[in-house]
Length: 369
Image: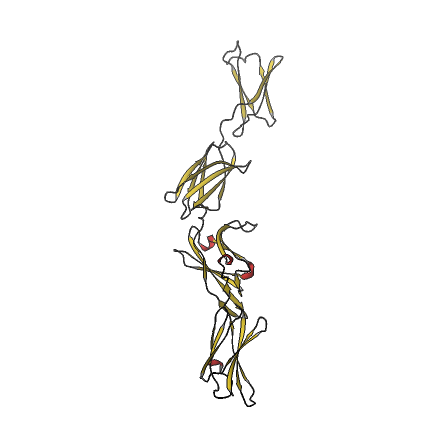
């Protein structure tokens, strides 16, 4: 008979308190009300007694844990041997709370993800936090925005301690970002978001990879670069197969999004890996990699040339040039004598062996005709 009607009850919470207002089911001498806040986390109960004669009553359970679930009960007590009338009026979460210490709050930074067999490296927004970043949080909600992009929301489990946000997917490359975070409690089908705090402003993100077109020459590669939006500087470097060092590097500033550089001097007929990156405010993009082979060029001279008298012939042998600069297909051996001053020439096919040899006749060949 004296139980409070749950439809007359309203309640709200903050990080450490729950306030409840209701309409009294009975008033007068010997009647008083009691608000009970029962914790679903540890079973503790906070009780507040109300003896006001007013029809509209209110009470507050304070000093509560942040992000905890509480069941709300209102009990009507009447003297004279009447049984207490108890009404279950609702369930509520207190707000989760981010750390008051800025150094303990989540941090945001541009980074590069670690590659895997299924996922290449990519530019990401790295969001890190520790177990002391918030109290009562089950999730962290991040809001990422810029002057030109609407905000993007992402959530992560609080116990995961990090979130990698793909910049390419989120179209955040080259932008200056504002990052805000809020703690979220999510228990028993109830959700409560805490106050939002900005953790980064004007955070510069790196540009995207440039696109590359290569034109190889004998001792150079001409690299045409097309910049991603916002890029201030484009750099290309050639790395030889034989080592990771950069054989040649050159940079240019894009005009209308494009520019061209020459990488030289390079070795002829050599495989190179060309890496191109874009830069913005000192931040570099991930490299765009392309493979190229320079063209063939004239070889250097043969090595260790020797002549040996072999009865009616001279034996001529040599070793391949130190810089063949391509595929050597043959050698041309020219010779002459006092009796044959115009000389003659013999063409010798290149061999796979380390040394190449030919025999030269001491007598001149017969005259034509």
